[in-house]
Structures are given as C-alpha cells and as structure tokens.
Length: 220
Image (cartoon, rainbow, N blue to C red; front, top):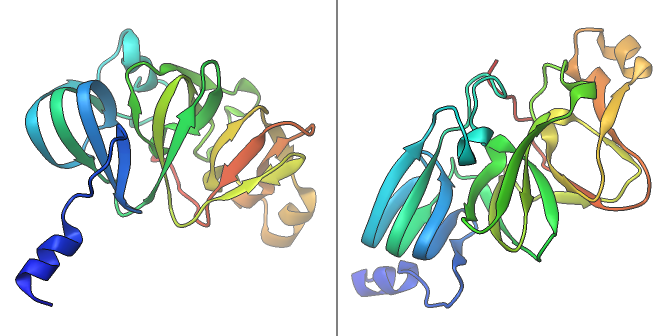
C-alpha cells in the first residue's frame, strides 16, 4: 500500500454526528461543549479541549465513581471545548445508542465509554443481589435525551425477558430489572464455588438485556 493510500484509507471520516465510529473500536466525539468519558480512554484529540478528572467523592457525575459503590471506582473525565476527541477502551467494540427524552438504559459502570453532558445519570446498586461477588451489579442509569457509547467484548447479543444471564457477561438492560437466581443444578454439577451458579433473572415480557461473549470480572 502506498503511503498516500494508507493515509487516505485511515484518516478520520467526515460526518455530522456528535458521536461517530471511526471503526468498531474507536469513537470520534465531535465536541462543541462538554462530554463525560471514561478516564484513560482518550487516545488523541484536536482543537481547543480541556480535561478535568472527576475521580472523587461527592456530587455530580462522581456519584458513579464512588469507591463504596465499586471497589476500585470508575474514574471518569470531563472534556470541554471545541474539537475532536478520540476514545477507545482496550480494543472493546463500541456501540452508540441514541436515547430519546425519558428513555433509560442501565449499564455496567465498566462498560460506559462516554455520554453527552445532557444525559442524566445515577448510580444504582441492586440490593437483592448486592452480595454477589460478580461484577455488573452496580450499574449506571442513563436517561435521555442524548448519545451514549457503551463497550462490549465482541459482538453483543440482545435478549428479551424472561431470561437468566451470567452477571459477568451482562452489559446493560432497559425496561426490566433483574433479581437473583441460584441454579442448584449447576451448583451440583460444577461445585458451589463457581460463580456460574449465580445468575441475574429478568422476568416479564418488556424491555431487553444486553450480554457479551465474555465474562468480565470487576476487581475486588
């Protein structure tokens, strides 16, 4: 491949959306204002941008970082200004979701890559399953309007309730809330210590659940 062909093939794409994929693992945020992004996800930027870490305790977006909610916390940054911000997270695939006004999705904190500042957010721990050691039980509730970018290991699978899922493979859900389930058959087969005996149980017939082909363990 000639140098000019390489440059032409891989340079940023033209577009008009605030959130746009350059490829399946790289997000381009066309910023004119502010955006919240996962700390450490910035790989490049241009224009006039400034960054402010939000890794401590009280108020605002820091509600989704508190160490008491996740053992390591989920530090994020706020980028402000005008320019292009390029984000990626460990080669995970990026899914861009456009939330309508009042539309809500609950996402594993580790799988939130970025969202527009106009999106409302709240950390939620599902108390009935808070004792599980598996990750994904402390989630970020994101309410539109606005764009949200989430990440998955591999291509996601979207399921409709009723369904049971591995907490470590569960990325997000909307229109439904999980309860806990212990599968005694799995327990007898693979031993009491296996986390696969513990599952999230989504009942009813509304909403959807997003899972990934990977068990992502939150640091303890």
